Image (tube, rainbow, N blue to C red; front, top):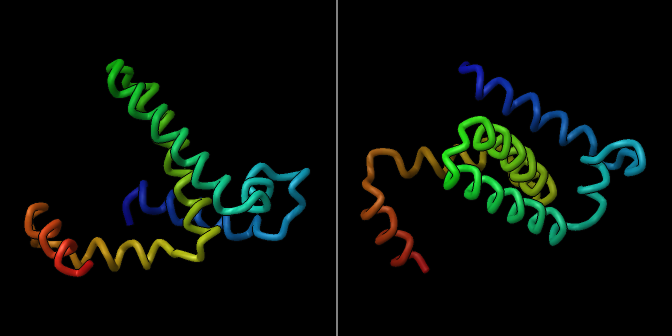
Length: 110
């Protein structure tokens, strides 16, 4: 397993373990207790900060903001009951297709 995948799995497991924990003792538990709308808002904020760092060509800032973005994405997935395996299944289903083909396929599926 790659270093990134290993870290992602550990972080996802840590987030899952915080479900039902005391929100006063864990930022993750606090986010999970505040509802899916709050988790989605935090993800959006981190996405904007990631874009700003990229636009400023701030390599360290981009790496740091990307870590925040991924953390908040994992919190949102956990809140929604979506696993990394669920996401992987969708990614695998798209392998071998161009982005143009994938977009056309999704448009037909709506």
